[in-house]
Length: 135
Image 1 (cartoon, rainbow, N blue to C red):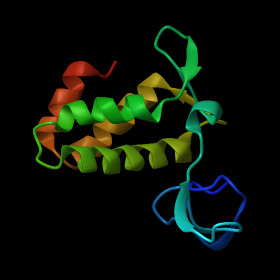
Image 2 (tube, rainbow, N blue to C red):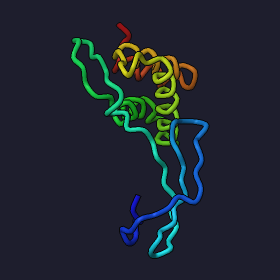
Image 3 (cartoon, one colour):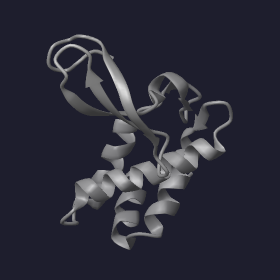
Image 4 (cartoon, one colour):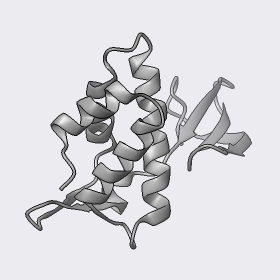
């Protein structure tokens, strides 16, 4: 990776795997300007996961779409953005554990979100169900 300040090569001085998700935290040092900064590397799910839609079509998975659909259900909360992000990560972990070589049926995503939301907030679950009914 190149330095965010001077665009010269960097070296990794510290690296840790996250216990919560499949990310890696890295502390980097620039070889030229000696600046230090931190990066967080996460998998690119849109290139590794695909969703089988209700009509049978296949499309790339989008964490952003998942986040927005969950956030819409949690807008009534004061900390909706942070909560939505945490719940999205929880749903994504569960989906990855049960995915069949990167293929996620749309219904499986809906079922997983329903289950996770039902453990957290009843109103959010009902709002989500109104937009994403179980079929």
